[in-house]
Image (cartoon, rainbow, N blue to C red):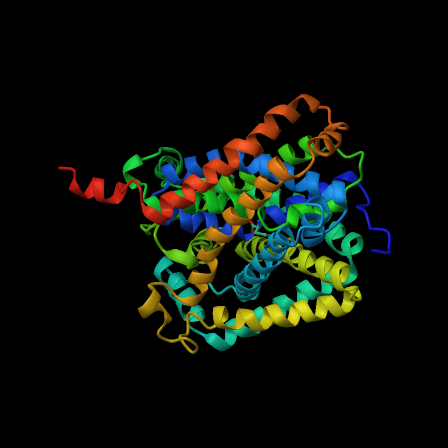
Length: 460
Ligand code: PHE
């Protein structure tokens, strides 16, 4: 590496950019439908538990490794392992996962862009909740439109990453993150006035153990890691742009709290709509697009609110897609000495192409029999694959940090933190609790050691 690494312009900028990667469609789109399909409360509780017990230590581990090596995943694994080719593969696994996630995530981000334009057109005016649902179904089944929006969104992502870390990522995150929060709080306040609020609150916060399916446990772990952008080397790469004086533990905690707040707020906006207008929580990938416009159609000033909301959704999606692309780009520039712009174009084109089958999933124009054979369409297959990729990526990071990297080096990264005393508990979590828990959850999913579904069905 010959050039000096670019650093964040300010602490706030770094914090917002990392939070920008974390907060996104995972909170606004994926979490609500996954919670809906997995029965609510128990899933939410597991998600919260995994976020704080496994997510926070992993998040810190990625920051520590990124900052101490000042490298992207492949380089960081290689350097800290004493140049082991096997560990370098773990870095490539991160790059591969970023690529598959970027390609499907970009398709969903394109939906948000489409809904922004539909809002400007006031598509919901005069439509019943059923009518609004139908609009989504028609859109989902239109392959050409999905490709069009997928393409446009990829252009946006390429444009920002092209501009570089400081000018692009940091600048936009600083402006847009706070606006999103304010808007969500306002919608939440409105949701409080709906009849279905109490039922929604109950659905989200009262764990009903009977609703847990074995697959929900891995799903909740995958979700916790997905909303935190963990297990892919993203936090690691962003950490490599961090200055040595920044406080890692504090940063990690602030970002977790912000992220969980947005996730829960989004659920508290969406579920009251479901219960107030007689809808079902299990509506799959279209949930947020089928529910929020119902609320907008009832509000004064809907044009502004609805358009504003979807614009913000586009921006939070963008702060996530740019983080995904940035990791792949940073890696290629570092490993092969590619000029940044060449890497951006190549990654943009490849992810667009790989995203095409996802964009065509609802129309059945490509892999028409996929769902009949595998039980879910191509888009959902790739999206659910993330529930395996992220825990596996996280497992490697935990084992690497706890067992391979020199302990003194890790300790040094904590020396600027006010919470230096956290080093010991953090280290032991990463060394023992995190890897053991992830292995257990993966095995549990694989072998269904405890057949909860079966037990419930057999109980009188
Ligand atoms: N954390 C992002 C979100 O919640 C999604 C994401 C996952 C982004 C993995 C980057 C990496 O939307």
